[in-house]
Length: 433
Image 1 (cartoon, rainbow, N blue to C red):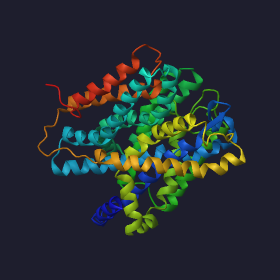
Image 2 (cartoon, helix red, strand yellow; image 1 turned 135 degrees about the horizontal axis):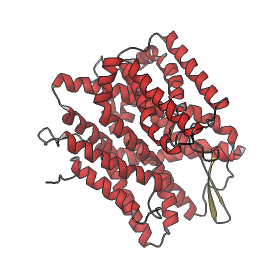
Image 3 (tube, rainbow, N blue to C red; image 1 turned 90 degrees about the vertical axis):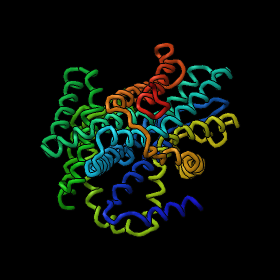
């Protein structure tokens, strides 16, 4: 296969000093998220009706799986490491903030714009075909769940030069500052019923998690034995928060009467991240030796070359497959979720979805690898930040409310407009004069 040959060629050219374990964890964490999403969606077709459920609610005993499949903390930690490396490289080359940021935004937003453009067309076709707004909203919300990540991660990237300077100056004190603020926000959320304040933990919790990547880059995490101690401590704190505190057990979704560890984020995600990160980092040396082999490293390179495309499109692919199965009389959806037969069918379900997703990713991934022309003018830092924040606002609204039947008429169209205008301002579309 041509794409595999290209991946092997790129893998063979990798500099020896590159930490390949960073890329490996990024690839594995995204595949875990994709597989986890496909697994917890509980669909059941019976007598012409399709029921869309949540496995975590239908079978609460499965909530333990979220402690394994909730690996977004790992992705943010890997992002912290990668952003530190990128900032160091930009400093050595004399690249300013705007020059650094435009490259990062291009890599993040190029595959996103393709997805949103496709959904804009699909939504228009469905609307004029007589599909109700409620149905369209259900499908689009399910498909656009992954884009919430870009809304917050983009803000983390915009702030990375400042947070990295804070790390270089104050070290772990800057990490604890974010962690403590996140903890205080949770206290206000639970003890003082200030639930609105909880939404600020999209910043404090994820900035703290992102900071751990800086610590990894600076080799400040210690020996494997110390890392395992951190992991045990993280798991212990997480257990205390869940079993002795007010936090729900599930690390994904809202199966516990509307209370969620992720919407908005809670300090439990930081404890989970420390548990996962300490454990995974304790295996860094043997894993880096394994990744020195061409085959495993080439597979890692291949996944990373289309990682955002895989992530952003995986639920859209699932929605399309489910829609076609429904039109085909519930083909493959007639097994009641949670039973033995349903579990036996999950490997086939997940393998089939990957078989559909991969060709789409192969086709669209070149857009993700698009690089800016060397002579392309770089917008000012103010334009880049303003454009990025406008895109983030539009993306957050689309992830939260979907397309069709918004709480405010026209909100979905306004969200699309925010993304388009923000893209123009930041130079990702033809620039405004």
